[in-house]
Length: 417
Image (cartoon, rainbow, N blue to C red; front, side, top):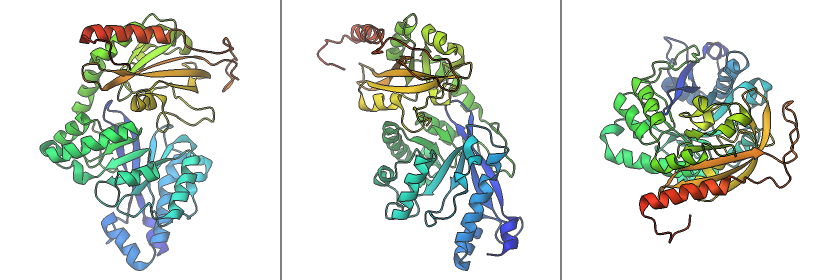
């Protein structure tokens, strides 16, 4: 490939926004050719590279350009979405360098290409996942990908193609399809991105359908420079966050009241993992106040749950999601960050909360305590609890809330949950 052309390629950064809070969560790197040249747009650049037999060189250059800011200007914890051509899984991998440690790297694979029948790619995906990077299935709903493909590659994130989002507020069929996608992705703990949002109606509909993130001209156009603030956030984003913070389902409200004065650190989330209750015992243990956390999604909170190997739990494995999806209590040992910045190891118990009127999961209750005999983490002082651990306040709180729910719904006690 012409070295001069390679040297003139540049990256346009498009923001991706949390639709429940209006917060910027990351950027996608979009490659552009020389301005005012025949290859200025991807629609011209990539087909030309294919015809010229230099698609491999272009892919390698795109990866290097997109990752360059990770070592300098990237804000810690923000997602960097990088498109990867599945035909070249064995190219040198610049993202293995420690320079990307400050960002959450999301490797996107388009469903417009066959994925499952590519053993080399599947092997590379497993390697990248083990390295702590996130996998995203792009262009969902337009090509080869089905739920079967999603099960095979196990993405952390699925991006719903613009073809399904365009005019969705005026199309009941599109709404039904996206609603169904949201249902099973939520059960599998997969984050959902609505691509190509261009109108206020599309934005509002994507929010109402439960899409986690949004991307499109309405939320921010691709730009040559990185802006770590939410550009052009639509007022609808802010108004929905305020409304959500004030609105708590009755089933959850009973649990919020039940944990308030409990001696066991506890909090309550809704099905989108937005915190709706945080008690005094949790504040005493970790230092965070209810005002700091309630109304915000726990996976965007400073608690930063990790497993003992240091992997973040909020995007991949998550006890809250497991409990809600399985409708079964879940227990795990994790580490969590305190307000002072240190980490503590805690035993976590999560129970799903059901709405007796509908039979659907309304959210989850999580309780935690310092783990028995844990080792110091990040320089924190060791603290040993009684052997055997256990959460003595868990069952009384659950039973109290359940009894309130039964009485409110006229429940006859014939069903166990």
